[in-house]
Amino acid sequence: MASETRDIAAYEAAYESSDFEVVQAEMRKRIVIGLVERIGARRILEVGCGADAIFNHLKDFDSCVVVEPGSRFADKARSDASRHSRVNVVQGLLEDVSDQLARGSFDLILVSGLLHELARPEGILQAVRLLCSGSTLVHVNVPNARSLHRLLALEMGLISNPAETSERQRRLQQAHTFDLAGLRALCEREGFKEIESGSYFIKPFAHAQMAQLQSMGFLDERMLDGLFGLEKHLPGLGSEIFINMRPAEPGAQP
Image (cartoon, rainbow, N blue to C red):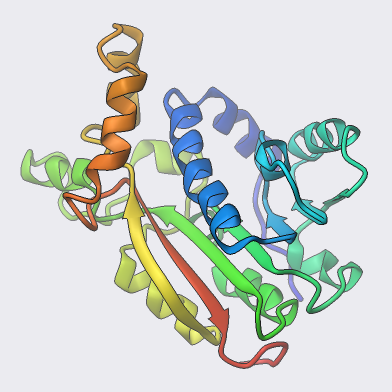
């Protein structure tokens, strides 16, 4: 299977210097941790852990495998994993290392904040599906093209359509901008059936503006919690979208 062509080192540097991304990542973790706890997942595969692997936030699990292509992020995960005997960190692209993983051995596969960064997201979904059993749940999340802050930018005339690529997206090598319909169509084409979907964390402004409000002391933890909860009153307008799904035919090619 062909490897994805990306400048991983440049991506790691851009990610770590991104102004509001730490907060956005925390909100993303809330959704993922809540899912792990809700379904009682014991055997977890995290595809692309970034700077903070999911096992750092889990109280109880049987095993966690992390597949991370970036050397800096993989080294950080290995360092964190030294405290856990049930964690295995594999450096590489999932498409290239999936033969090292046991098929059908995961309750939950996390593909968090990743699909939009890939020129060909189909490849990773195909690799994920081959690792699934009939009961494996797959969680994917990506930024939302129809988030509140993008729609505000549209009405202000800053962008011509909600899917327009921003400078920050280009810096982070983000190849796609998904709305929920587009993400759903991609996953269905690759042989998955949706269990549930939605959005989370209302972000009124762009990352740089949110960071500025935070540095001023205006945007505090209480307000961030409120913005996280606000999505239930503004469904679909969250800063990111997710789909929880299962393979229509586990382990089969589409």
